[in-house]
Image (cartoon, rainbow, N blue to C red; front, side, top):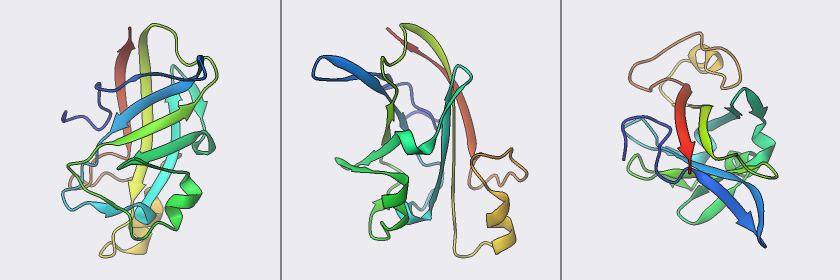
Length: 146
């Protein structure tokens, strides 16, 4: 597992029925305790300046896929910090061969944080607070598809 939240391993286009339907990228959890999926505030992914909203992203954890709406109700599905989540991004035609600049944002709620702090951590807004123990909610990386 790499130190960065956005992992280079597993970044590739995906196909269904011989047709490229999108791409996938893996992310890790920088928080040492793990979280339940219902604690995750999902954001959009930006690839080469193009924003793809959370409605077009599935989270794959332990072989099961979740939309962001399903994640809100998944209070018994735990994301261990030693497990990677695969983001399945719906983008007809996928990504061209070469380098791509990615930005993915998500945040997690924590029962011991004051609600005002939780409200400041919104994935699709500019970061107004950075808590070193939780990591950035906006993560960027340049990756290559070959």
